[in-house]
Image: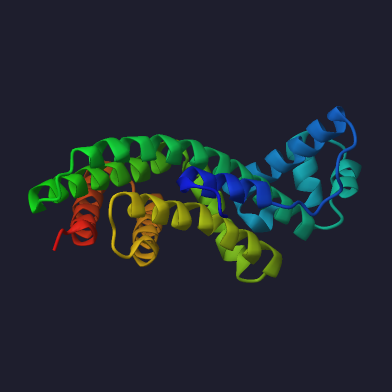
Length: 234
């Protein structure tokens, strides 16, 4: 995780993901394995983790039942690799997001003259960016968030998934730490832990509720208050 910048943190997470199932030896075999993992993810989003069974996944993927048992010895291997793929894809997505975000933050920081008014404006902008991130997660990546919640719940019973959940947590928490350090947080690691907890709670509440206008206003108010505390100049 020693790569520079928040994007480097996410890239390092992606590169550290390990799969448990049988490796595909040919391109066609890899595509079939991929189809199985994608089918398992769709079932998790629709029916939860308990809906993942070899026969159900084979039907969803349009492959013979023998294909699922060939690549995955048991359901735990299948679940583990499905979430490993999710973590890998999330890390790739976040690496691109962090890279763009860091550029914007450095541009904002260049306008910061260190006065309380300037720091307050920076806090406002960072809060808006965080709110936009949560809004985008809930509007465009809702299925991914649903799957993430399902895996977190299952990880309480499965140590293999717990390791992947912790790895996935690093994408947001360590990336946030890097970005808070860029904008001048005195305690970026501690502040990142709190900020990621706030964001994850907002995502969870957003999955439960369906009143985006009111939720957006509440999110912005909470994040603005917190970022003002973090970036206060005195």
